[in-house]
Amino acid sequence: MRCLVAVDENRVDPPPPPPDPILEQPIDAMDLPVRTANGLRALGIHVLADLLRLTGAELLRAPYLGRRSLREIEDALRSRGLMLAGDLKNWPPAAGGRLR
Image (tube, helix red, strand yellow):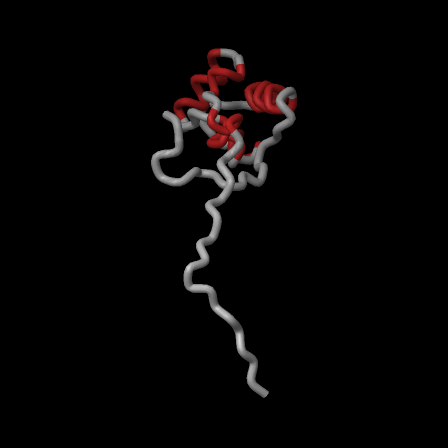
């Protein structure tokens, strides 16, 4: 039995939707205590998307962050309806799309 499938060579897949703008917010916008914010910067975390990829356990292994810092981070994220180790669709954005 033969099966024929039509192929449209002119078809272009639509680009993925842009990432949520909240993911590009700088960590400074979270109003974290200075020690916690500095600890995140020392880890190379500059925008929310960088932070949301991590788990609490990963943050606790960082030399500059402890349980109190983790609690402060989780509270700040929760107030924005976010959580650690979230599924970040369309992140990172296509080249050149990320703010720094």
